[in-house]
Image 1 (cartoon, rainbow, N blue to C red):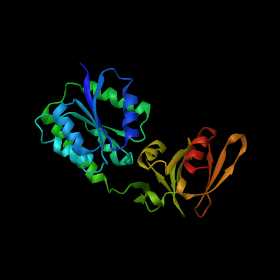
Image 2 (image 1 turned 180 degrees about the vertical axis):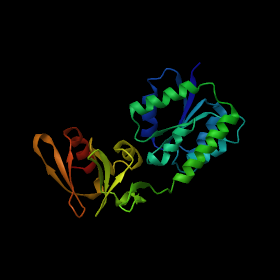
Image 3 (image 1 turned 90 degrees about the vertical axis):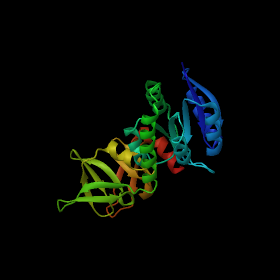
Image 4 (image 1 turned 30 degrees about the horizontal axis):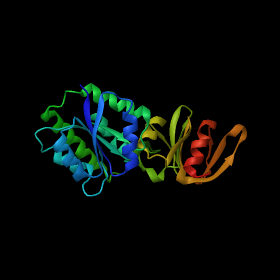
Length: 257
């Protein structure tokens, strides 16, 4: 038996995108749409869906407030939050049994999410859902105003915590991962993929397999040979960062070039 789903988002294009992505999954039957939290609660009480795609940021009643109301019901649908939050701020979602989708949606990420959902089908006892949903709500509320800190090794042998705005770039150097600030360079235990996930995108963009750049700190963009580019960063040393040919088109779109 398939899952009956409700899509909740105040933006019609986002609802349309979810419907398009769900068209690949015969197991999911979309029974209704809602454009705000109050409408979502009314529809869900009446239709009793198995699955709700719930936008976090909505007028009238937020997705978090909707989820808190759902916790009071005698039954709960499986909830997938959709959100434009920075991925690091919601990384803890993956520690819970409830899933999330980060906007803009990607087909691969959506597929992984739906595979998890379908595996959980029929495993929605109230106690388990209450616990998972409560943990998730607490995570969202705690992360709304969180400040991203990146731990690095200082030259005094201590662990220094860098604010994201201090970071000019991160890159590989002599098998280490280094983080560059305006006037210093630090080694970190994180790899570039970790930093790419933790730092907000597209502000921090993986311009090359060995470089992650803070695009707000780019001073110049220089065309290079064979369709490549180089970035001159706005730090004391005027750090130069290569842009791989595969990343040029995406960089131009981000920078409106």
